[in-house]
Image (cartoon, rainbow, N blue to C red; front, top):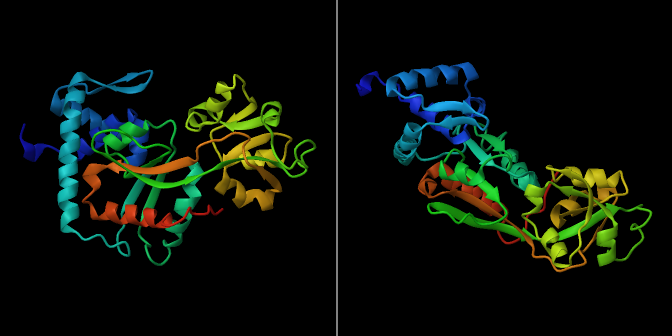
Length: 309
């Protein structure tokens, strides 16, 4: 193969499709149309002499040759990006850099409100793109370096992955202040916990907290009548129903006055919820990444940041 005749942009497209196992999601992240990504894959298949990806029920399944090539291509892209970044001092005031982050909605406002506040004057050219925690494969996204940083309730114990604790906060139980049963209570008892009807976050998110594990130890279960993947939906649904919810206290305190909510400490000892910032170690020396990580860590320095809506 003559490298002068090889379009190196095809490697970026390969890397995006390999990371997401989806032409559609790869096209969105690359800012391309889906047909353009498909055509690029066709060109790359001809040059490599391998199908590279086949459609399956799980999306685009990489071939054995694609799996062999992927780490080599990822490393080559990393080396090029690092070489370029080291020759350019990152200036947030003039940069048009796009940062891609996996950002759960529980902490989205705490981080994005202050970052976006700088957009008009201090960082007018920067752009942020946010991905949800689920259904992304969080660890794979970090290891493949398809996202700049991600945020997760627990450290990611993988080689070449960095983790920094952002903050921890307690949970609380929320009901509407005019709730016919619990609105006038001074505390939320253990019996209340198992008698009340709850709105809860989806199981894949709820497993990251300790409430259900503690209930299982007692041999009992909460009465969950509605589940949602959007944690910010919980206080609004609680405010207009006779259901209860469990939230990080920062979120609950932010909207309690506006929505007319009562907050209770849980009737059992629960460890605080923690949030960590996670990134690939290859980004350590990248000046743009260093700026972003420092900016985010600064938001939580010294005390828990209060969420803003």
